[in-house]
Every structure is written in structure tokens, then in C-alpha cells.
Image (cartoon, rainbow, N blue to C red; front, side, top):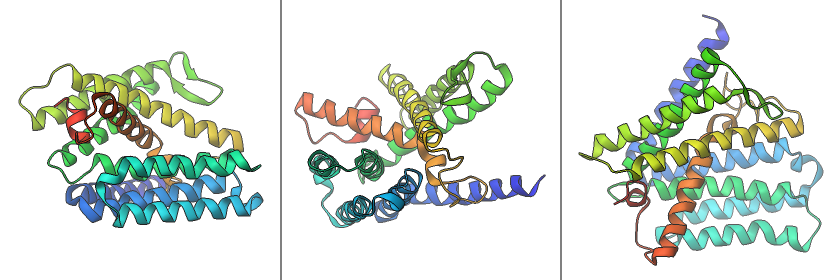
Length: 277
């Protein structure tokens, strides 16, 4: 076993322990994890897109926005999540509309900010919060792992050769099947039976996670970088590790918000939405 592989394994074990431990405890522990991920993602985004080098005022505004959002999530009221989302969108887009700032600046605020909001909302303190978060983890991790192994074993036509040459359609399909199976497995561990809604949600989140992976690959290729940073030994950066997860969380959160708006029921939890309760 090479030194680099050992380093990757050790880092993966530590990250998994921290993530699953915070998820189990929920509350402040998970809020801190979500906020830390959000701030690190914005750091990597601003570094990759060179906002820190070329657009000091825009980057300073971005950091101010992220800190303000983080404080609201840690010390604000949980029921204000949707207004906080509206505030995030306004905060991110207003300066770009009235000024000549780079479009990458509002993109970074939205990407990083929505990460902490959606994670926090999914792992809320209701009785289904833990199950909902484990459901998303199972879908994303199963998709990621099986897409890699199926793609290497079968090969075939490339999924998006100009963005990520290593990804294949066989891997994408294999990963999607595994993601649905993983999500249904978690649901069955909590409930005696599930209807069509659970595999449908798992399917949508699996597809979203793969889009998130491609999105990050596009950004890195656009700016000519290999890894989002070197914060995680042997793995690269935080964005490299959570690109699929954050897009799956985005999809789950935004679909739940849209569903609640259509139904006129703002009291429904993320867990209830994901499991069709």
C-alpha cells in the first residue's frame, strides 16, 4: 500500500467519523458541521475563481455575507429557513445587478450558502431528521462508489467528455441504480414498507448528485485547476468531496420548499417530504 493511499484511507475514516458523529447528535453539532462546510466551500470557490486575487471588494462582500448567514443559522430561529433562503438570493444577486462584479461572486455565495441552509434543514431536530440525512447520504455515497467501479469495469461511451473525460454512461447508470437501492435500504430500516415516492426521490437525488459532480468538474476545468484545494490530505478540497452531496441536498431542499408552497403547508418537515409522509 502506497503512502498516498494510506493517507487517503486515514483521511476518509476521520471525515466519516466526524460527519456521522455530528449527524447522529444533530442540533448544534450538525449546525457547526454545516456552517464549517459552507465557509470552506466559499473559500475554495473564491480561490478557484480568483476572486480573492482580482476582486477584493466583491470577495470581502462575499465573506461578510457568508459570516452573516452562518450566524443566522447558528443563533437564529429554525422556522426562518425559507426567509433566510430569500435573503441569501437577494444578498447574492443584488450587487451583481447594480454593479459590474463578476458573476462568479454571486454564484459562490449561492453555492456555499445554500449548502449550509439545505444541510441544516434536512437534518432538523424533528424525529425524521436523522433518517432524512442518512437517506441522502446513502443515495449520494452509493451513487458515487458504484459509478466509479461500474464505469471502470464496463467502460463504454463517455458521459460528458469535454467536462469530465473519465465518466461513462455505464457508470452513471450503475451509480443511479445503486443510489436508488441505497436510499430504499435506509427507508426500509426505518419503516416497514415504502411506496413509489421513496425510490422516485432517491432517483432524483442520485441524478442531482451526478450533476453536482459534473458541475464542479466544469468549474475546475474552466479555471485550470486539478483540485479545489489541498485542505484534505490525499483527497484535495472540500468541494471535491461534497460536490455530489451538496447538489443532492439542494434538490431535496428546493423540491420540498416548492412542494410546501404549492400545498400551502409550511409546517411539513424535510423528512416527511422525502419519505412521502
